[in-house]
Length: 262
Image 1 (cartoon, rainbow, N blue to C red):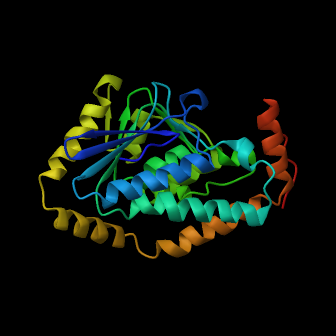
Image 2: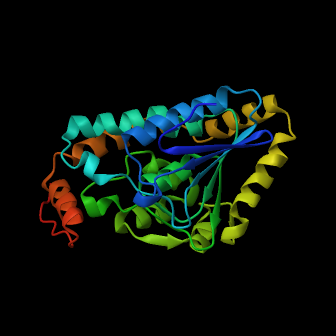
């Protein structure tokens, strides 16, 4: 089994647990971490002994509390589009279209790219203290890893609009009511619940599981044009004064003062 700088890999019978291990940074996503995730997912999906994957975060505070903003604070629109396209192709769509079930065990904050990572999974289980949100508009951005599409598919247009346009957080209980998460459990029951779901799936036909995932995904319709639109709009945000103001405010730990109307 490969070793990774930012991940811990643990096997339990026919299940693999991938733990995002940047606890000091609340498991924030950056380019090396996404590269690790791509390799780890590819390895798990190519391993015939693995029947399902649990994705979770290290520590009690965060699943993934967003992206590492300092990494893209100076990006221009073309770099922003490339960032979204690369992440979507190598990680988020890889999970979404995986022929094996991937369950997100949301052990704390799932914000921005972290919520998008959970949304890409086939099933989501949340600890009762978890908080979920897409705060990108506070940075002069929009979600760029499928959030505008997958949240709308799960929660509906009205809920998705409110969450994305306000940038606010919701509780695990609210996420369950919205249809975003399948189950809410106490923190010490989280991994056992996720493993129990996967164990039940592992008893079924692998060929049928793959076929069912493809069929369910096909029901979503023409999502590719929506994802492509999101990537273009995400990239375009990097060329606006609002993006510079949002990032500057975040790094300075102050409230942003957005003035532009373009």
